[in-house]
Image (cartoon, rainbow, N blue to C red; front, side, top):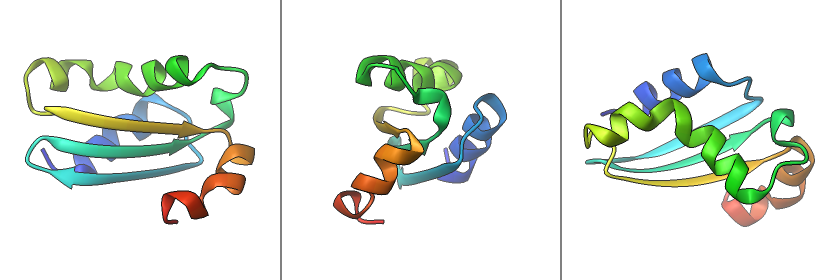
Length: 84
């Protein structure tokens, strides 16, 4: 699975302000930024991003997935720590 496919799936399912997907060979890193994450716990944010990708994880097209989800305010504060 190519990172752009993951991007397309997530953009279609979630209202994201910014999205970064990196990886290959089944191992991917996702950074998602959206105001929809406001008030959510870190786990709930990850579950929200994970949900649209469930079938691809089940089929092993995505073997490992690292998810970091931020509100726009959190992203503004933390983007340099994440290399963006």
